[in-house]
Amino acid sequence: MPEPASLWRNRDFQLLWIGQAASALGSRASTVAYPLLVLALTGSPAAAGVVGFAATIPYLILQLPAGVLVDRVDRRRTMMVCDAGRLLVLAGVAVAVAAGDPPLALLIAAAAAEGCLTVIFNLAELSAVQLLVPSRQLEPALAQNEARVRGAGLLGQPLGGALFGLGRAVPFAADAATYGASLVTLAAIRRPLVAEQAGERRHPWAEMGE
Image (tube, rainbow, N blue to C red; front, side, top):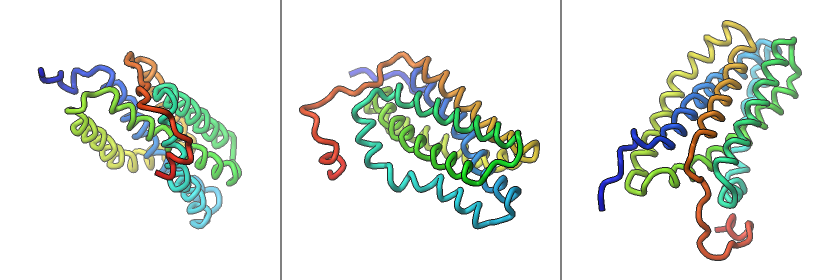
């Protein structure tokens, strides 16, 4: 069997990777900006912690149901819906911050909504990678994705602080823009991202239990 083409020549995978590199960098920047904004508005580290908790709790409660959902739908469509939702959430935060001092409840709700959409997106992306690359290239593809995550973590924190220094709304507007970039790259992917169903579909609760 001939060797598959290099990952660097896999157009659809690279489009997915580039879009997610941009959005991961923007997400890291806004993650830093959230506590800075809450501290600036309230002066309360506890309030900043509540916003951070709101962004984290979806990772604890949504992984299983989101995984079952992703197995049943078109991955690209799912990712695009999630990106569109996150774009609207972050754009809304940016507008609210630019207009004045947004209420803490709004920031908590925005952080939780973005977290929920991110959980679903990440699971859909992981499944999409398995459909975009041959099985023999799955390990290097996942390694390339991990390098993206590490790079975003390294650069995103100082970027978030720098953008916040330019203006409180700037990191949130920038994050919204990166979700727009991700939408563009997802729309340009040609390969179908729907996995073939093997056997009869079981009840969602049965799959979650397994």
